[in-house]
Length: 454
Ligand SMILES: *[C@@H]1O[C@H](CO)[C@@H](O)[C@H](O)[C@H]1NC(C)=O
Ligand SMILES: *[C@@H]1O[C@H](CO)[C@@H](O)[C@H](O)[C@H]1NC(C)=O
Ligand SMILES: *[C@@H]1O[C@H](CO)[C@@H](O)[C@H](O)[C@H]1NC(C)=O
Ligand SMILES: *[C@@H]1O[C@H](CO)[C@@H](O)[C@H](O)[C@H]1NC(C)=O
Ligand SMILES: *[C@@H]1O[C@H](CO)[C@@H](O)[C@H](O)[C@H]1NC(C)=O
Ligand SMILES: *[C@@H]1O[C@H](CO)[C@@H](O)[C@H](O)[C@H]1NC(C)=O
Ligand SMILES: *[C@@H]1O[C@H](CO)[C@@H](O)[C@H](O)[C@H]1NC(C)=O
Ligand SMILES: *[C@@H]1O[C@H](CO)[C@@H](O)[C@H](O)[C@H]1NC(C)=O
Ligand SMILES: *[C@@H]1O[C@H](CO)[C@@H](O)[C@H](O)[C@H]1NC(C)=O
Ligand SMILES: *[C@@H]1O[C@H](CO)[C@@H](O)[C@H](O)[C@H]1NC(C)=O
Ligand SMILES: *[C@@H]1O[C@H](CO)[C@@H](O)[C@H](O)[C@H]1NC(C)=O
Picture (cartoon, rainbow, N blue to C red):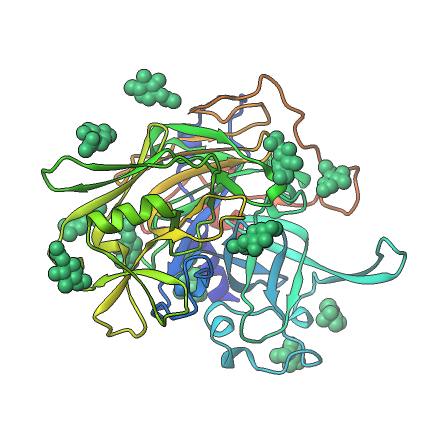
């Protein structure tokens, strides 16, 4: 318990925002936002044969964007992957009736933890008729994140087995976590910002309901996306390779389709014609593992150290650059001399997307996603941010501090008619946490408030 509490305090590494509040677009002393640190763990596994450009979607190449939360009373600590592509709150569930393995035997369970309802006095099981009138069991419990207690969050119980992982679904589906925070009055719009490199050293974060202007070089470049596709996407006009002191080489992208933003795939995929031109210009071979397998862009790993370049993606005026040396991953085995290049041709021509923005670029980005108006805003990360400057996103048709072709009005999401007892959720976030120390610990009032919340 004591251990969990200390860890919880460290999690709510949320800064001195109240000193600095902006009043756009809504006038408030304390913005209604919920924020916390993200972290990640490099789970090294070289790219294998089956990781083709389109199938190279094994997120376990690199576990990224994880948040620490606690579930239940007393709190049970778990790490959850932040997942744009799902809508549910999934957690490894300890129940001997359905679980064959012990948590410690399954790697992601051992790393990120599991939940045991029997140990929680706030667990609730309800029989709810499904749409055919048959009952199904709904499991809920209190989830605490970033100093905020969110009651009655529906938990999707995962059996403890390989292939499963804890995750918080942030997709555009109107039951995803940002919508649940609106339903409970904790934020005003189903929206969030996500930024930075979620390495083990930290430095990345997520902020529901707000933007933090200190963390990027503004303004945000905002574009609308189609929510019905179930994910967030963004247009991309060109990319560029810049070698020291040489004129950069530009590759225009003619596809009218947008690019999927997921913040969890290590590989970036772009239209094949442009990628193959770049491969040719920079002597990256495009070969198959076997004759009949999909082809892949490969090059000697040594070129990671002998060449200095940057590769940049252009989203309007936002230029997101990655180091050449960060775009290499050993191919086949960890000590391979051949590396896969982390920009690969998109093979799935039937997809709604022209490609996908991988983590090597998304970790250099600040992104704000607002499901009310279905706009995403991006900007280059400010690597040396000043004090936090938090602005609430509000429920208007725009994203604050962003340029974009916003509609003049929208119909914002409103919480459905009162159902479960959600009103009792409490935010001990910014309101009660005036004191922040660089080490990431809150002191004084903040600690007290958090104890009450727990
Ligand atoms: C999250 O929890 C893990 C395990 O308890 C801990 O090692 C890690 O430092 C925590 N990370 C953050 C950012 O709180
Ligand atoms: C869950 O917690 C209960 C109560 O502490 C314990 O008896 C049970 O063994 C736990 N379940 C698992 C699978 O660890
Ligand atoms: C919920 O907690 C109670 C104890 O407070 C326990 O008896 C019950 O078994 C728990 N529910 C589940 C599904 O474990
Ligand atoms: C992100 O962090 C990892 C681990 O610390 C590091 O290897 C990588 O270079 C970092 N990436 C960026 C873009 O800073
Ligand atoms: C979104 O996509 C769906 C399915 O592809 C399409 O029917 C709809 O017209 C699109 N909406 C907009 C606003 O483009
Ligand atoms: C590529 O675009 C940049 C501007 O972003 C320009 O300065 C450069 O000259 C272009 N390179 C070539 C080869 O045209
Ligand atoms: C291109 O790379 C291959 C190895 O991948 C190397 O053998 C060849 O010499 C390179 N060509 C040039 C022009 O650098
Ligand atoms: C991009 O920058 C140029 C030059 O500063 C400016 O004229 C243009 O309005 C900007 N476009 C957007 C979308 O911000
Ligand atoms: C990019 O790589 C060079 C070495 O190739 C390194 O000195 C530099 O710090 C890196 N830049 C970033 C932003 O990671
Ligand atoms: C694309 O869709 C068409 C028609 O649905 C199908 O015949 C074709 O096999 C698909 N191609 C790929 C690469 O999936
Ligand atoms: C959520 O979306 C579904 C359709 O996907 C719609 O029927 C429902 O009314 C929406 N709920 C709310 C509260 O907007």
